[in-house]
Image (spheres, rainbow, N blue to C red):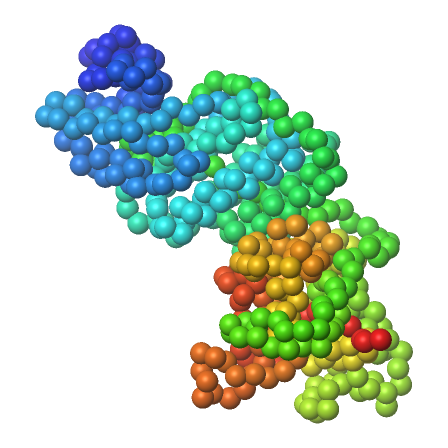
Length: 496
């Protein structure tokens, strides 16, 4: 049998075969050059003895050609004749993360967060479009000397496997651990994220959306504290790894990363941190969430959602009150059977927040928004502080102050309120309006989608669990006892 390496330097159509990269059972992968225009390419050729499989081969080619993401390598051309079948693809610049791992050249935490963020965006798009891919590997992630990231095209024919994303995230969590430069700012946060990607300490696997959100937060934290991080990417050689397809083993995508906060336990409670200040909204005519306008008096609204620390202090005051006074702050309509204002799973949530450990798979802090709060709990807290919940009109007026398009806000993950990234902060200074946690509002209103229905309470804003709709998300509920791990509140502050 002819040694395929002996074909180096020969021409196949318009392509000169320069270097054999991989010799697999059915395919040969070459570094080549398109002679007519002098363009470097990667050429994957179906072997002569495997030409009867050309339809399977071309089905994978069509899946690759359907992708329209700038970060993913392009398919230039496919040729299929009686005696040959091959595809020509973009040769990606730079070196792969697999090569960098082999050379023991680590990535700084801020660089890894950036890489994972861009990867997760690409993987989310592929996932949303239902595109099946080969298993994700570091050998498909390319970085050039300027830090520009590209992904090899590893799409393949067939429906997307339900567990594909979870498997890829876990694989990256293992492989990137070897690439993380330790001992630098952000390393502990990245190590925690990678552990979560591997499934450690979690009841359910991370999603690509969560990986993306975590990395956005980590990168924001690190770039705020390190204005000029050294993000130089050293070159290395290309290296391909085998995949699950008979034709495309070697071209493997990679993925994203995350944000966390601080993975250290502390037996003593950390002092309260400076939180975002309140925001004043002027009197006048403001847009409503349903496209109209409403005249509102001036008001002041909390710049952040109520935190675990703040809610803990409220419960401590209730404990110090005599039995006769414990209901002082309760709404008059509160059910008689409701005897306290403890959030669901409060003791475990509070302990994790004090010690900065995991609760329900999330690294906690006393400055995280309190959740598992029902409407009655939120009202009582506001009453104790001399404030109240916002109406949906007030909440929306505050959102729109200085903001022409609320959909520009990117939903943040659940994190300490002061660490919510700038992508989920309004120009007026409100944090977490598009994400973090969803929020209770004050009044019962008609759902415009059901104008003949009964009035019900509105939950506004998306959350880390339900990002759809962002800052414009709304839910209607008649269950004021509803408690969820992504539901909290902020308040209208007392007037002068």
